[in-house]
Amino acid sequence: MAVLVVFTLSLVAAHAQPAPTKPIELIYSHTSPAASGIGKMAKAWGDMIEQKSDGRVKFIYYWAGTLVPIPEQVKAIKTGTADVAQLGPLSIASYMPLSYSVPYLPFMGIPSMTAGTKIWWKLYNKFPAIKNEWADVKLLACRMMPPDQIHTTKKMVKLPADVKGMKLAISSALISKVITQQGGAATPIPPTDIAVSLSTNVVEGWVNHFPVAMIFGTIPSFKYHLVVGSNDYTGIDAGMDQLIVNKDTWNKLPADIKKIFEEASAWYQKETIKMDMTEIQKAMNVAREAKHTITYLTPEEVKLWADAAAPVHQEWITDNEAKGRPAKAIYEEYKKLIKKYQ
Image (cartoon, rainbow, N blue to C red; front, side):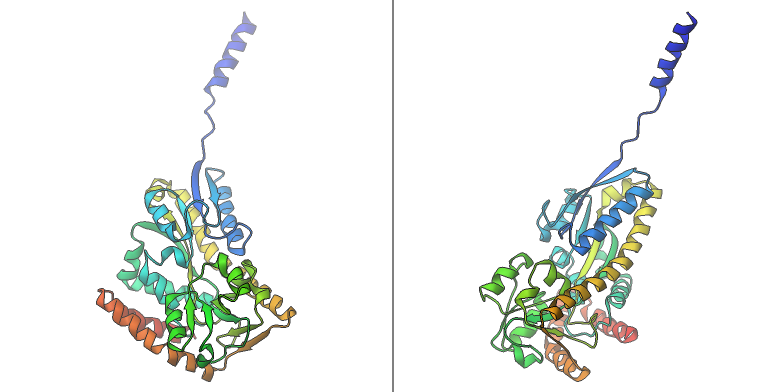
């Protein structure tokens, strides 16, 4: 009888043990391949949150726009198709026009990715028109991506007049206008199609940054690279890389897990810039080993490009002011901050 009682109590005790807590599973949609530098950093961000939450959070990853197309990442977050998303420039073009276009104002003289990130956040905090663009999502991180340069196949583009008659794939509508005004033809082509477009002479150059040129296998197609500035980390313009969370998902997270997300996101901003600085050098080394010509502009030559871009800047101010956006004030503050960080 005693044995039976002990056995019965053991069964009761076993049944009384609490069931393991199911982790909070979050769908994470990313714009880049998992093997890319930015993909690896995103995974490190997710791993950090999973580990620091003791397994209470688990991410389910969808890479390279496989869950939703890259331009619809914001929509996916707002509708709950995804819980977390990494955004590239194309993801926010239709949803956050100021946040998208301000860093793409060409030839403003952004000193570095680190400075550009600080400047973006200062504009975000100063101007409600920018902050309100993110009201429907939780913005966790925003950092400046590598600066765009000009990569060409047939000749070196050094001065604005050199683009006359050339067909170039472009990174933004604003640089497209500069190229068009100088007599060139600017074509928006998805990065996935650039290699074929270069090999078939649909275009003879690409305005984008070195790491993306390497990721999509286009470095071997080029012979010439123009670095717009005095060092490898300055350039024409730059897109932004953001991490966002669905608002309802965020509000349901426990306070301690929210803190883990915020700490991991601060780490992500800083370390992803370091990663991209390394990726820039890797890509440039590939170009150097292939005996490509890499040219750096003098301050006087940069000014020629800035002068060529001035009408595009004024048009951007006029168009946005007409839509009720404080573009002139944002532009003047942007110029002031760039001068400060230079």
